[in-house]
Amino acid sequence: MAPAAADDWLRVDEAYGAQIQRRLELFSQARDAVLWMEPTALNAAREVLAEALAVLPSLGFTVGASDVTCPDGRVVPLDLNEPLLTLGMLVQEDICILRKHGAEHVLVGAVLCFPASWRLAEKAGKPLIGIHEPVQEYDNDLARRVQRLFDGVRAGRPLWRFNRLWYDDPELHQPRSATAPRRIEPDRKAAPYIRSERQCIVRMPVSDVVVFSIHTFVVAT
Image (cartoon, rainbow, N blue to C red; front, top):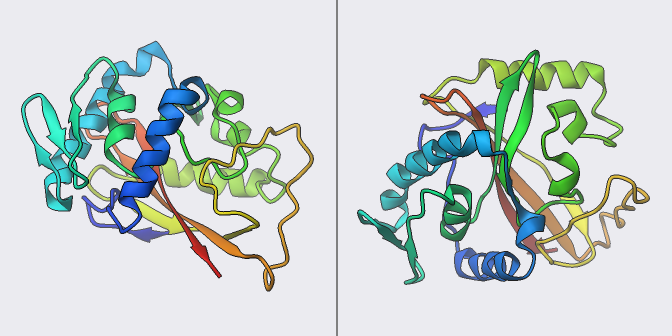
């Protein structure tokens, strides 16, 4: 983990247009699989959208009172009754919202178009350790360390990390059930694609929820 600038939890890169088109397809064809929110998380999701809107002008967006013009020319209406859907149509990042319940942070809402071998429906409403089942490396010690990161992150001082995965195809939408056999990663020397996620942990200043943002890169080897 490393510190990130306050506004560096969202990025626009050369894949923006293609990734947004894939997101729009998923919203049209499989909305329930990629979008979920507890009703009690509405105000927190609105805050996340508002915080994102403050960042977007520096990334090439034009933010108006009722809509946003995107770098690809699309105009997206601002719908405060559907803040995660609106955000999902604006940015490349998947956005997960976690709220502290007892000793753990629990997933209370997400727009997740590009999962790397997990399903939103199976993780909705679960704490961090439940979200990471059945990841063998996510033992109790790692779970405690991750929870400390979520407890310790401060508003205006995000944290970030990245991972690296090897895949046989470049499809961004890679859902996989926790009950399915574990994905066999292709040989790293022969795999045709590398997938990497830039993950940020961001504290919201008012609701105190934590955002876990995921910017996905897929490149040919």
